[in-house]
Length: 112
Image 1 (cartoon, rainbow, N blue to C red):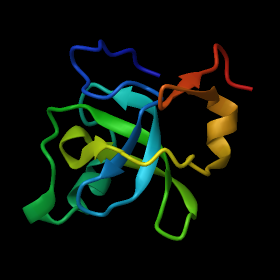
Image 2: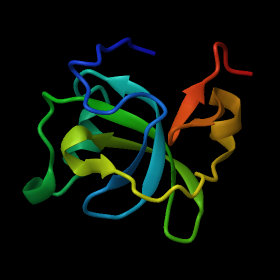
Image 3: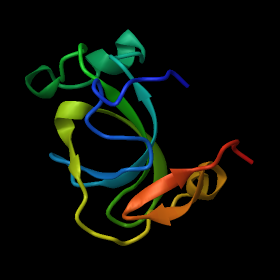
Image 4: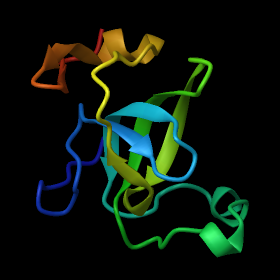
């Protein structure tokens, strides 16, 4: 996990967010200060919606509309804070977090 200062990333680890375009929800468990995935993954995004690489990218324990869990990698420009207090139902949440305080999942000191 790469450490990133609060000044560089808009959202902290543990924050529940929603994808602006696709509407899925997730909780942030890691942050890259800029794009750090494969070029093949990046090129698979349609050019008209492809995000800039020079911004934070977030790793999310996500759930789609039918509550199926998966891991998402999303640029900061495509995320917004989630208003719903409904829990994220992903098996990774219990491994990485100790619960929720004021709407933010609290990271464990060490994953199980």
